[in-house]
Structure formats: structure tokens, C-alpha cells
Length: 172
Image (cartoon, rainbow, N blue to C red; front, top):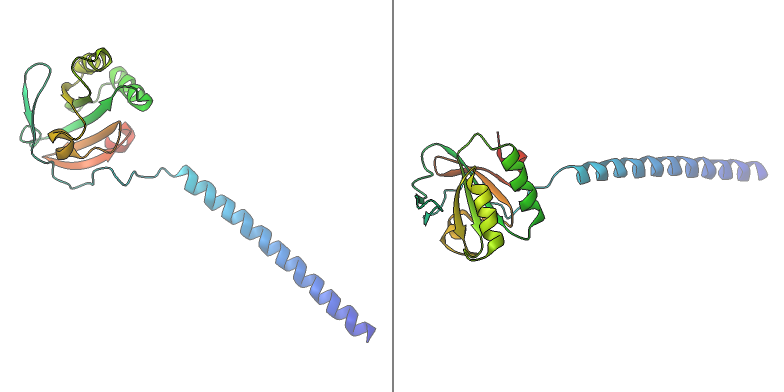
């Protein structure tokens, strides 16, 4: 009887050790997968989708040049939406000014024409882009449907080819 008890206790002990080792391996694998998920950039689901056609709009740049959805139909352009009091917008603006994109660039700056900070941002971007003032939920927002600030879009022949919040997400 004691021999049977020793065998049963030994078997239970061996199963416990195997269970413990399998649990540790599973925990280690879950941690690796969790790190992968955290490192993988997530696409903002509210960004305009690739293949979406730009809606109808008409605007005037700071230079008085007319701009419309028809203007963006031929060729490839980079479109950006910016606002003041937005740290990512400031960082992106600096990046763009230091290394201007090779694509024609249109910058929509949200805010009042009378606001000095909005004016300063528009003047800085004017060196590398056609700049248009915009207000939240105006025809420009309806046409492009930007998702927060900054939003960048690569537009090819009037259709959104790429969208994101960084240059790496939109430039080929």
C-alpha cells in the first residue's frame, strides 16, 4: 500500500512540475506577443481610407491662388492639416521645413486669420506649400475628412493613396 502511495505521489509531483513548466512557457510567449503588439504601430481607424475620392471644395491660398478638388486631380500631391497648440503639428512642421517633400504640398491651417499663432504657422508653411486657412467642419474638412491633427494625405489623381499622422505613413 505504501508503495502505491509513493507511486501516486510521485506521479502527481511529476505532473505538477510539467504543468508548472508549461505555464511558464505560456507566460513567456504571451509576454513576447504583447511586446510585438505594443511595438506595432496601429493605424488610426478614423483616418481617411485609401481609395476614397476627395469631396468637392473650393478655397483660396494665401497668395490668392484658387484651389479645388479639380486642382488636385492630376498628379500626386501631399496634403496636410495643421493647427496651433498641437505638439505633433509643431514637430511635423519642423520636419517638413528642414526636409521639404518632393511632392507638391498643400497645407490647411485651422484657425482664425486674425490669430497671430495661426498666422505664424501659415507663414512658415508658406515657404514649402500652398497654404489655406480652414475652420473645423467647413467644406475642406467635409471633403478630406481629416482625423485629428496633424493629418497627412497622399492624393493621387483626386483619390487618397495613403493617410496618416506622420510622413513615414504617407510617403512612398
